[in-house]
Image (cartoon, rainbow, N blue to C red; front, top):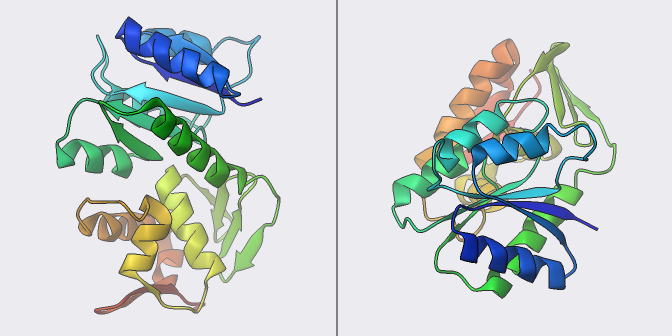
Length: 228
């Protein structure tokens, strides 16, 4: 059974989400702020959750800051995170996705819609359960371990950076259009700026060092990975 943490300071919303998840086949735990989440994650007697629902507007440390902190921590960066917020500003959505959030749900939302989004994210995450390490040129990428080696050196990537590189590696030699990459990594309903893709490509090239030269820009079309 999948276990889900719901970090939400409004008790009635938190209780409703936990109840709904419970009756739809999940094990859910409600937490009221980032401090409670940290305590739950660091509990040596508990396994890590399979997914975190994280509200942006929280007392103390806000959800965006918590998201950034978790995605920078090797212990937690692979846990899928769905952001919950009453904000409708595009900037907040883009910021959350850029930091590695797997989805973004704006309040008010239907409980069944939320359950559907959770199942979709968990399905994507489960696709990384098999160990099918791929080596291409200077790169070695393992889906199961969520690890990347460039010229034999371990490279630390965010979730979105990993998914983007993984797609390019497994489509090596094939030109991936911008729309194909945005749809595959951020979802078909992504409404943020297309520069999000360019920023991630630039960051990938920088982190990969000399191996970053393998990511080729096809002007006016998209990107492909080629072996030097």
